[in-house]
Image (cartoon, rainbow, N blue to C red; front, top):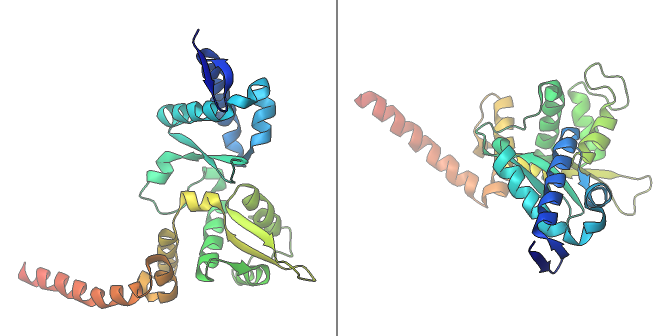
Length: 247
């Protein structure tokens, strides 16, 4: 058997690496349904074991198999590669601009999309008090842990969505009593875009145009982009009308 010797692989055979990569693929497939980030330490303890020095090369081989065979990718959520998540490449390529979950999780997905929208509209970060107030206006009171649809809303948002990598929930320094803020998590950034979420907001507000939110639109596309889009919009409409009249 051919011996390989690379910086992080030690001395293992090609067969050793291939077998361990298959073990890693099985591990990722088995854990992906949890929707929780997978810690490198867990991978080392349950899969790599005495081949920990071969982690990087084994991970790359496993990623190739995951992509080519299952349409999935293994993406690091923290650097340097402390946690990972499994993402569906078909969802990333989908024309549907919204996050997609299993049928039983659709209600949670809808709430997550609303929260991501609120964060976006607030300037990419929002204090916890402001988020809770916004959700309360929608009939979701975080102080009542028995919502008939979501159960404990605060736990869902600050624990489950955070653990799954969709939201970052962090304590503000030097605050007493403690204050927290919310931002998009890495997984949300992988599975949707600010453009798509702003489009979602426009649909909620009865088909508004995205440039009608100039602060958010400029933040996404650059300063002056909203004004330019607005200036071009009437001419585009007139062009369509002229075409219809000609026909």
